Image (cartoon, rainbow, N blue to C red):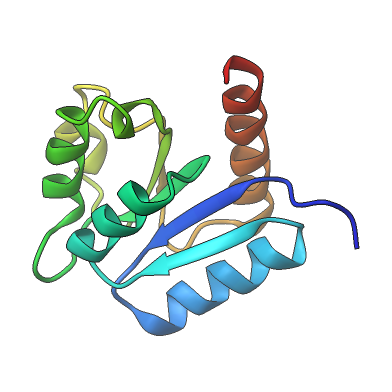
Length: 128
């Protein structure tokens, strides 16, 4: 097996969706860390900052919106690109402040998701 392509943190409260995303990313060479809500996601990101975060918006304890607000005030975390995955059609309007690098509708087309993850991980590695 080739070297890892980077680490992706998947923050998603639906265990089935979380595991499918993790399995797909692992199959394409990524190291994957998962969290079931924003609070656990913050702990994971602060413990070992990933190269990219996939973030659901509607979650218990700490929503994706709240996660993005906290991330914006954290010097190290705000540099990590975030792809938001959501069924909320109004998310683009609510995220117009630039809190996410990209917003994809749920369920995402896997080729589009993988292309986006690859591009953002590559950009992050290039800028260090």
